[in-house]
Length: 118
Image (cartoon, rainbow, N blue to C red; front, top):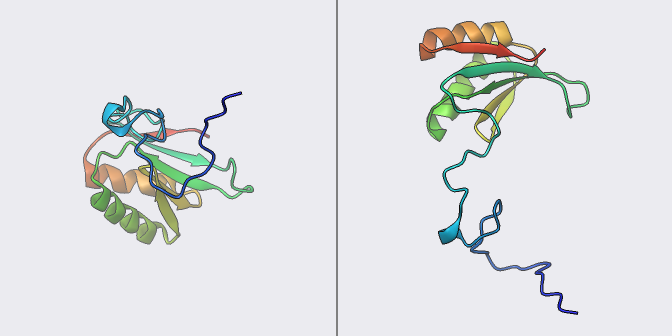
């Protein structure tokens, strides 16, 4: 029996965590981390799944660089008076703030905003 699968290593790996190929031969480099479509439409949704019943407002599809996305998240948290974070390019705000976020983003980004989900 030849079981050559690496179980644990303290050294850094040169393989992609998604496609498990060497980084120079990676086939998923141009793909986004999140499953959200990148079609130029900003989507605002409300979700409670996996959060012990606590609702969060999710803002996805914003085409900004990482520092600009952090700044936008800070502005939205201040506007809504709540906490939040950024995970995989998606802004999460604690609570249901869809209408506030929609009106603010329509004024600031000057692009199509779409409310999704329940």
